[in-house]
Image (cartoon, rainbow, N blue to C red; front, side, top):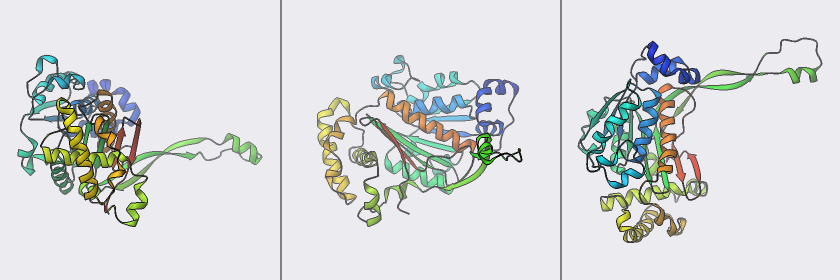
Length: 340
């Protein structure tokens, strides 16, 4: 991470509520953070809004695709007049308006064309709308250079976040009984007077890479015991990434009927590859994987923005290592999945 920055009077006034919430030191760390945000669809817009308003140092918006009519459903940084323009460039002006104190730049290159050294310029890399191969590559680079990595995506009613913070230390406030000052009182009376105070405790957590989270041997006894507790969105995520890899695109609402059939076929192939029964997932999931729904983007983007702030500020326990949202069930679950 970059060195902590001094907070100016103007910044202290702008971030007053945040400083009261998580402290001046945490805000200084945020003001030193350089973030790369990959993918400016609906989820990327939500994450961008949350961390820019929090007061990071800079954000680079990376996206080589053009905005579409569909973006008007979830991408609020792009106006209807910007349809057909590059997503990163079209999002630049509205992002800068959110917080003039944050440095905002747009990059129109493909993430797949970027050299490894490009990613080492940042303190945090957040990748959305990426193929699984790109997520694995970027996560490996970040892990080797002690860069905090986040990956996520939204497909219709389903969304997920993955985080890899390496060896991460953080401070957490925990309740602790205050020392008793009164003497000579009955025990029952003392218990009623006992007060709780919050004390700051330093803790640490060790994260796993995405590759480890995907390499679970689900045929092993230990994995089988965990299978019933594993959110089904984890396996839906695997199916969707295999679909993107095999078809070189996301499920398309304009060819929904055909893509539902392809998704069901892909489900069987993916689950068999994972040594699992195709009956683990109902075929119904395939009807709910299209487009980006604004409420789902808001939920997953809110969690990812929160986790980036926690990771940079070194404040509070981070999610380790997945967050899954299932809009059909209305459930959001945190789960640690790793082969190690």
